[in-house]
Image (cartoon, rainbow, N blue to C red; front, side, top):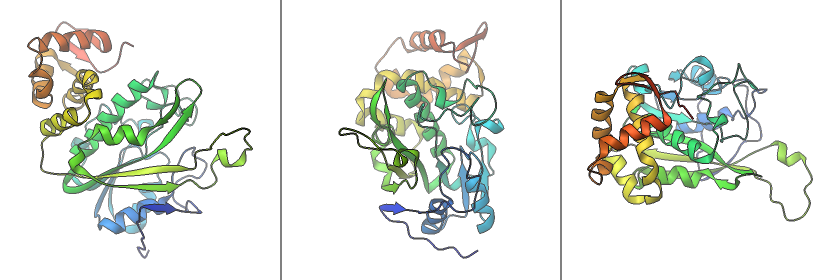
Length: 301
C-alpha cells in the first residue's frame, strides 16, 4: 500500500476508510493514522485504546510494528504500564479516549459494565485525573524525540455544561513538549442530522494534540506541569498515587507507594512535611485496603 499523507493544521476526511469496524461507535478514520505515520516516518506505533482495531488494520497494511491495547481486551491505560507491554519505546503512541460520558462503552458498545471504563467516570475531575495518567503512560512508552498524541473533542452536557477537553489536556502536560494542535472536522456525526432551535451550535470538530518527548524524567515533567497549571496541584496527590500504581502494578505495599510517589512527585513532597500522612489519607479515601500495609488500585468511590 502506498503511503500518501498530508498532515496540516486543519484536516477533513469525508470517508473513514475500510480499517476497523465502521459500526463501532465513536471510531475515527484510519486516514489520520496514515497521515501521522507518514508525516513523522514512524516505524513503530502504539494505540492505547484501539477500539475496533482501526489503527491495527492500518499498521498491518503499512507493515508498521504495532501494539494495540484496550479495556475490552483487558488493558487499562490508567493502571497497566504500557512500556512493560512493548519491546522498546515506540516512535509514536496514540490515544482516542472516551470523552467522559459522551458515549458509554462497557455494557453498551462491548461487554459488561467495567469500573475502569473512563466513559463511566462519575464527574469531570475523575475523567481528567485518569486522562492525565493515560497521557503520562503514553509519554513513558514513547522514545526520546518520538511523538505521543491524543485525539479529543469538546463535550456539551446538560449537567456539566460545555467542556473543551483539549484545553485541559494541554494544561496537564509540559508546555515545552507541546508540538502542534490539529483541528479535525467530524464528518457525518449524529449532531449534523438534527435541526436545532435558538442559538445552539453543534460540535463538528475534534483536536489532535501532539507532544514531542524530551529527555526530561517523569519528576521533571510533573514539576513543570505543577508550575504551569496550578489549578491541578490540588488534585495531583491522587494522580501521583495512580501513577505509582501504574508503575508498581494494581496492588502495592505502602512502602513502595511512598518510594514511587517520592520519585515522581517531589514538587508536592517539598511543600508538605506530612506527605506520607497525605498519601495514606488519599489511599483511604480513594483506594482499596487489600490487607495491612497493602493497597489496591480499585477505587472505593
